[in-house]
Length: 151
Image (cartoon, rainbow, N blue to C red; front, side, top):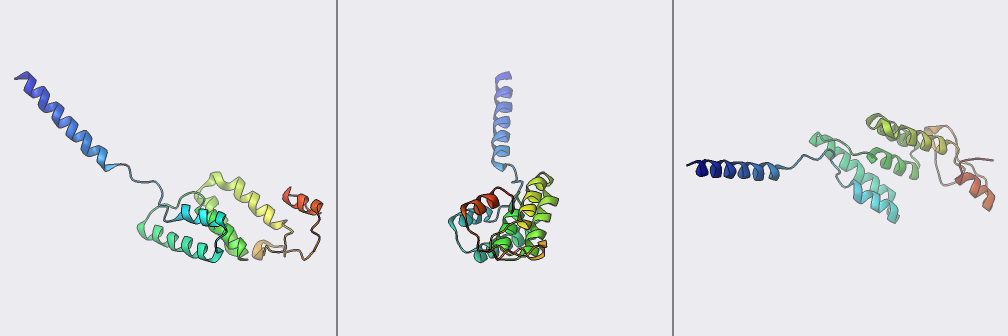
């Protein structure tokens, strides 16, 4: 009789373990195509298409009541910078800093370097500095710009 009780308890425990193992943890963040858009960014795909996809994903995440993953707003901000929407870039960087305080040093670094960037193809918008129209493309000027210093 004691063997049957032990076997019954073992069977119940194993069924319970299987059922709880199938449930799985709920994901912490809702990714909604974020990884694929980062990949598209590195492939050099259309920035406008990436912005549209990330904005659409952001709307879906908010509609589901989910959490935006780290870097989502930073990626969107970088895309806005690349298409000349500096004011929206600042807004996204500030949102990233608010949601993920550990990103503050990097977001501040990016904002500082946008203000001092001398490339002609970067539109700063509301950051406060207009892009330089200088045609100086010597190796020393390029290395100074990439090192974070300006002449």
